[in-house]
Length: 461
Image (tube, rainbow, N blue to C red; front, side, top):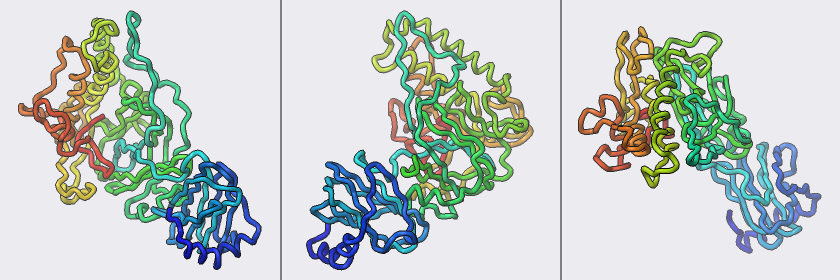
């Protein structure tokens, strides 16, 4: 937003505003979103604005081609220019009864104007979408969190914990989410980063399933299962909230055409498991494995382990006696579930390009992922998984998943994680989130299990 100097204001009034203000104005109602096309309005065009002690006017360019629109606003006493960045801009301040918005150099483009007394309407959100995983022609993606699970810690003497196979609670009300994705060669990032501009682009592939999902971290997200993708292709993805708020971009790559592992998703007992696993393809019409199609010889032992652990945990006086000023039995069960799912469901992957070739946000020294080749016919890490007749590469769990259980659970349970100095990297990804030095939290080479650029270094579940 830029306030004009008196000379600029006089110039604008002389050559544009005075002419337009003499014409009949179209009034923009408070708390409204309006769309205009240059072919259907005058050039320049003026719009009346409502009076408010705190009015926000935001504009967004919807056309994909370059545009030269300029937006000027008078609140009754001063004149401002709304500066556009990434295709949108906004102004906030008090307005009087004779406030108006002037649009110049409209051309043939389309734009939106939002008028609100409740903050900015058009914006780029800080929270990013989340990439689950991909196969050769499918992918799982999630919106940013739209709600967080609100549960009360149980209290003594009725200290109960969720069952091993708890059903998903009813989803809270959700904003409207739209997923936009295309090969990175389509250069979505060169478009105006507005909901109306991105929504006009055709997505490559198809959304096969979309539902609300509660991940293990307690975050409600919208979940998409996407099909019809091209193997070995870099994709760019955005999530648009309520048509006007943009989240992203994030980037991901589909696996090669020879990648053999199917995806698994929507397991209430492993709510953060959404990735490729070493199984045979699911029987038609299933597109991926879920709680209804996963073989019971895999799920039943996991549920039994979870039940037995919960029974043992409740032998402690949960809610009455404290084993930590920071952790509770509920925390312990949640972290154990996360670890159990990470080691029970081996994650398939494949070697990524070398660090100098990969897209790592400008970091040419990005480390290699924690990959472990799995030859055909070799028994998998989880003995309840079948021996498959294909070769694949396993992405190891992050060591921090085990450390989280160790920190959250009572000492008497005997939780113990391998030590980085003594062969921990044979079964875990080491040094990515934490440095691997004894007692040091953080300071790892990446600081995270995966990033927005499509790099996945270890399975953080």
